[in-house]
Picture 1 (cartoon, rainbow over the protein chains, first blue to last red):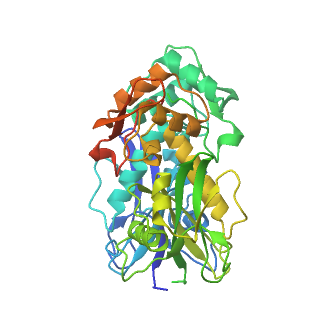
Picture 2 (picture 1 turned 30 degrees about the vertical axis):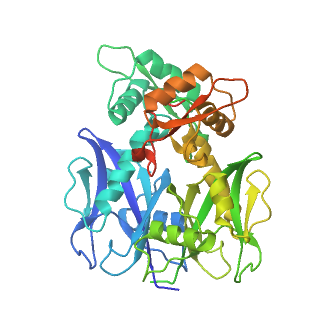
Length: 221
Length: 221
């Protein structure tokens, strides 16, 4: 059997006022030491139960973040992507509210707009592009966008996130009908947000069953 | 870096009169020697450009089949799935017409219904289940089912394949409108099929641009 380098990389996505952003870390070791890159690392066969477990460990150790929603994205592999040799990167992506990254207080962590990425090592630009494309595509028919918001949010806030990801406006009545059909939200009791002259809006949160797995919509938004 | 076993496995799916079937091969070596399993093998770092290239090589060498459509499915990994040690299987799936398997004339190749799988080694049952689920899900909004048919087919034949995969009947007018919208078919000139008392049906084939990549439908069937 030939020696193959086995790693995991994590695309940690969040939403700021400027749009969709990805978390980057300066690499501590060669190759590409000091360059901003995706959080990643070797699989530890003695410690990780599987690649997902490795991705959780890498994310926790390097960013201090425990992502509630982490999904396998795709595997990037080959002789050409890493100067150290033939390599496999099992890539995962995670969605978290922006506050979770601020609270992590890791000075070496920076956010970059997915539309204006700095030069990245390996095939990390392609991995991020694949993650953004997956997120936009899954936003059409799943609960995925909810994970970009905090624990509780109003329906107008959620609609704006879906619209931003889909790149088009959605009719409010149709959006609410789809949310009802998905049956993934529950009221966050006793919590309201006042928005200027409008009446207070109900806050919602994901039902517990859908915090770690997606709710899918058969026919899309 | 810890030693990790890196392999590829291929779920080769086809359609017979009995429904969806998967190609299995008796394993030549331990572990599970002699047991029917997915065609798979080690990545050859000295020969394969990437994992997709490895999957193509394994499929060609072990089944004699060059699948026009081969897509990465997911990566299965961990300490528990292979008695030899911590392992990664980058799984691909391919769709071919049944005639391509018959013509391969490999006596060690057998087809099993995806609904009545024999006991399988490793996590091959889970890999096949993931492939079938992906195929059914992608059939809702892509050209994927076309690859189960031969080079030329009639619209009624194609509709039956979509219906079988989706598990529901589709209105004929709606199906034809969606096929027009997808704009993925072209007439196979001068070829017609006579079907009993009906007038001859036009034969179609995939446009060249969509023989190796999918055509997607924005809103689903």
